[in-house]
Image 1 (cartoon, one colour):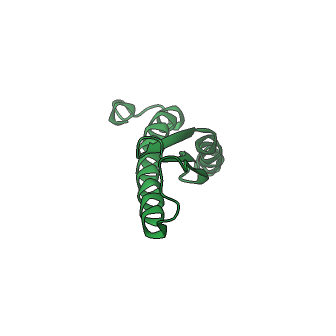
Image 2 (cartoon, rainbow, N blue to C red; image 1 turned 135 degrees about the vertical axis):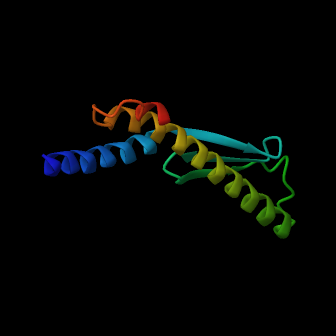
Length: 104
């Protein structure tokens, strides 16, 4: 019984990880200066730099902006991951535990 439950849980975890990769979003930093595309699995998929809004000759400024944009994007990805996981966990919790699903 527990073997089936744990095996099913591992399978569901893999499914959840795959679904998190499908939750994509763009994070707009500096009024469109840098747009970072990521997913809820906390993977950076693309970085777009708008040369009209960033002084590409100022290496330090570009590096600082890219670093800040990535960090903020990863924070947003963590929030989205938590939200997605919360919904997915409700679906995989076994029955017979009154009120447990309400915790999520």
